[in-house]
Length: 228
Image 1 (tube, rainbow, N blue to C red):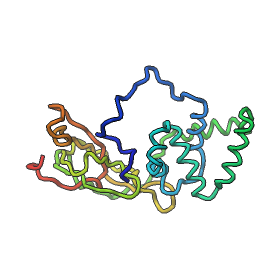
Image 2 (cartoon, rainbow, N blue to C red):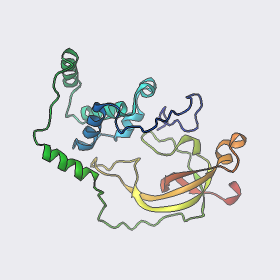
Image 3 (cartoon, one colour):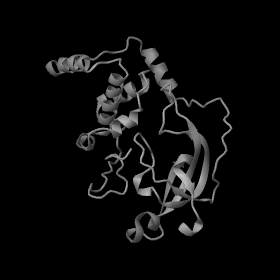
Image 4 (cartoon, rainbow, N blue to C red):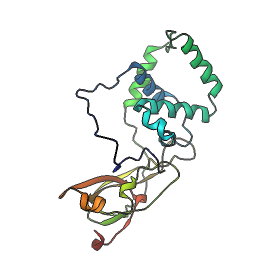
């Protein structure tokens, strides 16, 4: 969807501050949010990223990375019907009144470690899909001018712009969609596409610069070489 999260090419937000030797987590609660997102066996209706992208713009801009994750997972649990807003508020009220109260701890540390190790292993799909890629390396393509209502990884600044297929990655999960079961994604050919900077930003672009974007096949349509 089009929203405040799609900030590529936007102006007015200042430079990106890079933290030297940045830790994985700045606060202990962030690691707990990651654990909740990874280990909770409840699919998020509509997908986790879609929840984040539907946040109020002011809330989105004022939230940290893991605050966005927490919002998305909490909303997902409520939307899935396994948690109510009233139950959440009751629990929050308890910790506001008793901020040093102990949080629940899993009674079996070995089970926690085993779950963590399973989550870190790659889970390749066993089935072979007869999906033939539409494009090949060197093909001239154009990013489709799409404005979906749900999640998409097609940036606004590249829509309608022409580029060239630089690589074919194979068949991969399309992150934009969730299967009806709520688990997993449909699969599509995935490409790396090179866009020349002047094509994206006109005369204000840096000379001899280009942007490479990973793009699923449904993002693309053929383009003539004269349009590049």
